[in-house]
Structures are given as structure tokens and as C-alpha cells.
Length: 259
Image (cartoon, rainbow, N blue to C red; front, side, top):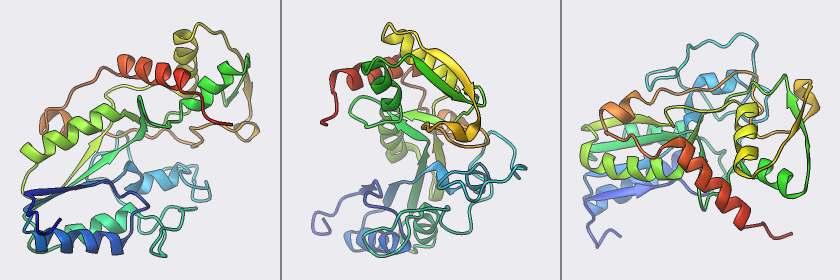
């Protein structure tokens, strides 16, 4: 890669983010004389996500400390989120640590950290699968913790791809972070209803306590990130979230997981 002398490096932090991986990426960019690093981070870098119970829920508080939507200047976590999985270099998965090393990497003119929400889309093993599989198995009962008001900001995988392409052309100099989230979203109950409509199904919703059902948006506060930089600086406004969700649901339905 270094001999190839690319103008930019795009890294997805696969295998778990850590300071060691950030350092390796920065050093690779310097040796390759690449002037730009685009790193796919996550909205989990924000302190608010710990307050909302992201991870194993142990950091949740009833009184979150940051206003919504979360802008890129919102307070970051001061360590891995509770329950973070180990990475293959022996550290805990931590996008904050990865970003910090890249932020301090002298010699790389541009470092762009893209912070997506929960990713969905065709080809992605997304959280929507839980709802699709319930319909596939003929389940009509739908337990809705606290009525299903949980909202966990999501993003179509196509929007991330468009953000990467736009960042290579338009991201400012120096370290620059940008949330990558859909402009609109559904609550858990609303998303379940939309998935059911797309598959011609009817759920029978049942309100239950927050701890009485496993579901893929289990946070005690809504997580919403501002997409203003994404729209106004990078110019990314597509795809339409309804169309992207329909494509995702169709893909999940056609690609039944192996048992």
C-alpha cells in the first residue's frame, strides 16, 4: 500500500477500533505520503450514548447531560463505552481512542472522521433483521417496551458510501468530524409498523416494561445526531430513507440466514 502511494486512505475500523490501530493507520498514511485519511468511526463516541445506555446499559442515567440532536462538537466519552468488546490487539473497542490518535497525527494534512448511526441496507446484517425474522416465523405478538418509543438514529449504508466519496472531495483541512445519519427516522414501534407494512403483515402490539423484552434499540433515551454538516458541507442528501428501508427489508426477506 505504501509503495502504491495513494492520495487518500479510507479505513472502516473493521475488527474493532483502538489507539494502536489508529497509530498504525496514521503511520501508514505518512509512509505512503497520503494527504488524506477518511476513517469510519461511530456516533458511539459521544458521552450522551453512555448516558442513554449504549453498550451493556450500565452507564445509563435518568438525566442525560447533552441536548439533542448531537452535533459534532458534543462532549465525547472519556473511555470505552460500558461493555465494549475486546479488539484483536488486546484493547477494548473504542472509536474515541482511534479518533484521538488520528487527530494528533502530525504530517497528515486532512483527517476526516465519519460518525454513522446504526447501519442498515441491502447486504448489511442490520437490526431490522429481528423484525423481518419475526414475520418470517409467523409471529404476530410484538412486545413494545415502554410502548416502543425508543429511537436509535440509523443510517442507510448507501448514505455512508456517498459520505465517503464526498469527503474525499470536500472535507476541510485538518481533523474534521461529520455525523452520518438519515435526516429522519422511526421509533422502534414506528419502524416495526413500517417493516410489517412492507411485508404485508400485521403485528399485535403489546406494551410491556422496558426490561421485559429484548429488542434492537434498547436505550433509555433517544439517540439523535445532527446531519447538518453532512448536508451543508459534504452535500449528501440521498438516499430517501423510505426507499432505503424498503430495499433493506426486501434484501433481508430474500436472504434468509443459515440456521
